[in-house]
Amino acid sequence: MTETTDGPDGVRLREHIATELARARARTEVLTDVVDDADLVRQHSPLMSPLVWDLAHVGNQEELWLVRDVGGREPVRQDIDELYDAFKQPRRDRPALPLLPPPQARAYVATVRDKVFDLLDGVTFTDRRLVADGFAFGMIVQHEQQHDETMLATHQLRSGPAVFDAPPPPEPRVRVGGEVLVPAGEFTMGTDTDPWALDNERPAHRVHLPVYLIDTAPVTNAAYAAFIAEGGYHDPRWWSAAGWAHRQEMGLTAPLHWHPDGQGWAYRRFGRWAPVRDDEPVVHVSWYEAQAYAAWAGKRLPTEAEWEKAARWDPATGRSRRYPWGDGDPTTNHANLGQQHLWPAPVGAYPAGVSPLGVHQLIGDVWEWTSTTFRGHPGFTAFPYREYSEVFFGDDYRVLRGGSFGTDRAACRGTFRNWDYPIRRQIFSGFRCARDAGPEEASE
Image 1: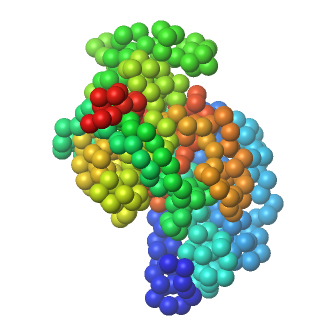
Image 2 (image 1 turned 120 degrees about the vertical axis):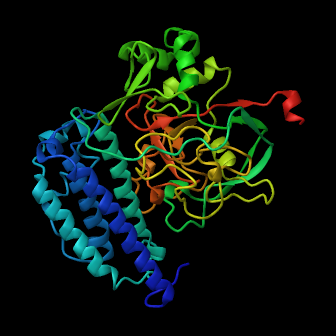
Image 3 (image 1 turned 90 degrees about the horizontal axis):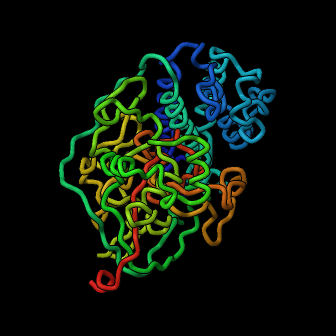
């Protein structure tokens, strides 16, 4: 779709951009208006920024890329660029910075947004790669939605009374369990065609995988509780050397936010306690914990390529879909996304989102750890800046896929890649397992 100035396609693209910008900002306002100013400037965990930093940071990125670069306009607040540079300011140090107070931060992001809406009417979407198909606007939409998920994770870490309400996710509609066999062969990984795909999702390339099996659903709380009950946290056989050292150092005995309640486990969700529900995907586990569980279960974590093939490959056509269910955007029937609910849906709640191979809930609910370290696809080119992806490549980060209940649909698709340190648990992370097929299984 790379047309357009004032034709019908251009009008539709402008309307789409304006809608997505407004939708992201409405969510940001919910996340920041629900608490008082003292809560906005407080650091609820050294792993996270004060909420007011995230608020002004999304405005600063929008100013840098859309007002100054795309629009060629004069800076709004060039004096604060360094304060809101995520690479120059580690999260643990941000509370000590001379940050904009909440009223000023709100006024700043509103001013920037007014200028963006003003310049949107005059943008030519064909004059350079940064704005082709509205890419720069899509990048900023995704950036704000990513920070909205980060702010939601901060809310999960805050103490005090609950401030959010949301309906529970749907109940299971089908029974889901066991594994799915994925036949050997090639599939297309990554994308060349999704207009708002980010640089680490590109380019599309062919990948050959041997036959393997992957869990039909994410690992549930009940399955994970069995690992705990059988001494999984106290048996070094299941842990890597680094994982065991981290488990001992941090005293890990259960997922983050789990506590014994006398009869089982309780889980603190956004200020409210509830019993751990057996059929929900486990959440708030680190890569090391996921790896240990998989070893205990006689399995392993899937590679990133295995995850993506299970999510996208259609054996009937041989093509890779944009999502497990097809190329259409997610709806509330397909997946638990966008903070519509405040915890993962039970397994079997979204049969409309199943992949052609019969794998469920690959999108939404919980980010799924893979065994893969974060690197560029073959032929990767950084765009529009190295600091989005390339500076994170290497052995330090593990890839997560699929999004969570806190991920917006604008920042989630079958090719979207997330990454984090293997020790991280404050994110909405879970996993599913995979394993190599045995000789008899491979011949089926």
